[in-house]
Length: 491
Image (tube, rainbow, N blue to C red; front, side, top):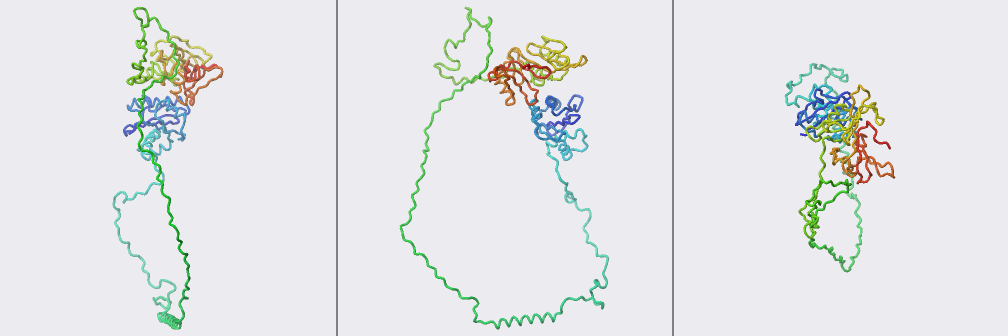
């Protein structure tokens, strides 16, 4: 049976339940709490975090990955919600089935147990609705003892005789002389006389009828002239011409073997400066490729013929570093058992410590102060080469929070700072299109400047933003950021 995760987005709290191998359990949303505080259904970033946390709790508590996701909502809207669909895609969870709260409670009442707490009824109802469907509608049928297979409790018996016996005349139309006989119509002699008279009249009609009168007029013969047969030569049908048959024998065609070719996508390759540490021969010259002297392509054999044993080359995804970037924050040790999400809105000191634990002490630290490019009262910027995180607070007593990360500098092939889709500094516009598809937004502000801006999540408005050298497929990513704490575009 599939593992089903049910989430109830209530007005004050969010509850979760999970069904694994037919067993249904209420899922704790935190270590000491069965629920978490409700959030605004239009808050895309909050929905992404909620779905990620619920998915992680399901794996941690019941050791199962959800195959299906049911979202029970209070507002009754069961149409496709683009915000929920996009949030589920961002959280990498199954596409949710949106269910009305009343349907979920009705399914629990029809198929589930009794005595369930009111606050848990909708989330458990989502599980029973996915398992058994909607509650039956209409009046319930009347169940008799015979339907249950039992005999009637009362034995069959003959009804008793009437308790009142009529004595004397029963109607006012009976004779007053006290006779109990009723009038039964005309007497028998009168009926006999009428029958005899009818028979006499019928016999007279039969006798007086003339036998010479024909019953029906004689039939009049009608002459019919048939046309003389026409004598002529017999009609001969045109001969049937057999259709032209195509030849059934096809000469064999010899197809030469296809040699797999290797296509290299157009990409901008950064210049590489050869240092003095390159391999050199004893005479001080650079060691050359042995195939260069032979004048042969390494993929071809002697004589220029292609070697079919050489397999086409494949490109492997670059390795993720200790810090991975995303539109909701930064992930430390992504795709490992020690994966930790440092999300936007997390405590400032905790975020700084976790990033420093992965990358070491920050190279640059501005300290808390006023920053005109940011919206908060005080801002602190921490830098590790080309990576910068921004912490913001509203007052000196405020502990602060993580609001933004920013990336520029050397290519990500050298720093290993990538998004999960392997987008970083030096990636091309073609890489962006392949990673984000039709959802990618790419604009060129000026016709005189080929540079452009991109946004990976234009639907929710909180994706990864950045700039490219030009908007063609070969254009390279120059800088990237996520989070709306500070302004990065000034044109």
